[in-house]
Length: 315
Ligand SMILES: [Zn+2]
Image 1 (cartoon, helix red, strand yellow):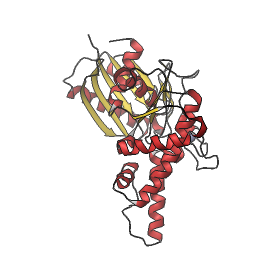
Image 2 (image 1 turned 90 degrees about the vertical axis):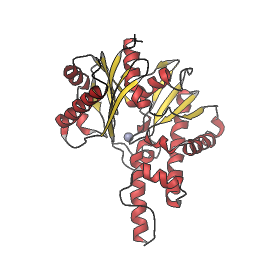
Image 3 (image 1 turned 45 degrees about the vertical axis):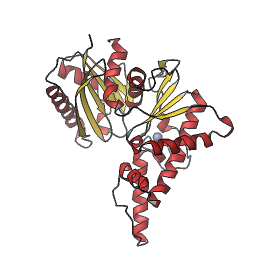
Image 4 (image 1 turned 90 degrees about the horizontal axis):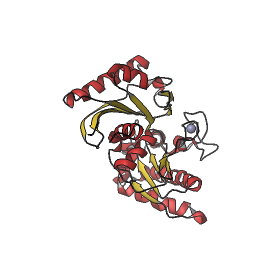
């Protein structure tokens, strides 16, 4: 019998709670903007409320476990978020303890990229793949890695922090404290920063433009899809950095498949095509055949369920 799971996906921009079963059927999902600046208690209150709302919407099904997916560095064994640069109030929080006490069932935690990789292996595009990476291009950037058919966590459970590998040694300061990280120059937050700079420049030169002062990555990508020239320059720039990041990763662990997920992958197939072409060029003499696909849409909803299934062996 499939088990019923309450799943959380906690990201820098939004929090999602869903109720589903270990067959991959989703019964309810609730999404809210992440309460960033209301402290730890405020964030916990938001998590409890959104979880209760998801349970109620699913007809108060009896859950057996909670799966938690959270952006940042996670200690899976202790159930603690070590640090999450884009969600400061979650730092040091024992999410497993708090949520399992509140809902009175066991809970498990994993970071967003590894969680999505587990879900792609169980329910998505990587069922047959032995060596693959799931790369979320969101507020931040990470990588969930499968090596020889198994999730690769590294000796501290911290593997896959591709977002904090440096691409431009003299580049802008990253939230982690290093300079020119992949994430600092090619993530959704980087796109928003480039857009703000572009807006100010266009305004200073009194040029007409479709740019506004506080655009997010999604709006910039939409302008790019509609042929906007300035958005095109920004997208060219991030695609180049994304390709460098992917080639760096491929040189280290030689995957057969790379799945591009996260908010920016919603820009669609044209965006993935450009990444594919640029990666091919950027391999230069190191070329190897790596399939690059857009990740399963909405895999984040299945990630907490897949995590519970992966850890408990429940079917
Ligand atoms: Zn960094």
